[in-house]
Image 1 (cartoon, rainbow, N blue to C red):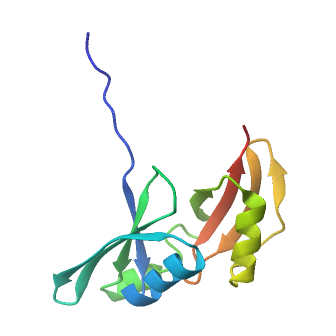
Image 2 (cartoon, rainbow, N blue to C red):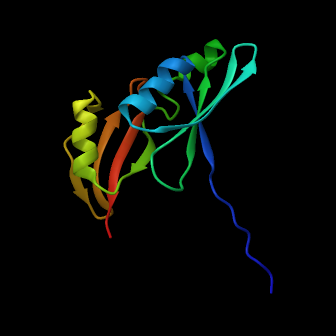
Length: 134
């Protein structure tokens, strides 16, 4: 019997203006965990954060190194929602994020797939905070 291929999206590179500001925001405001922070030499670091809990993709915080990259910080998708953060308790996380100054662009709404609200991170990236149904 042949095994089916198994793949998993492990990480997404997210352009940021600098490592320390991004690391402080994603861990301090959004409550993510720092998975790795390694000095790669020459001012470059390998910084990886992830939401609390098991599984799912990680974010590689990639410092913009060129003017072209810097122009894309906060707008890697042309103004569309870029990242989708699932939660097991929407009300808890929505309230906590609001208390920490996260800017939601809308009030929470019910969709066929769950409860959702769009927020903007400190760099301008749009996220969906989602509590999936069932």
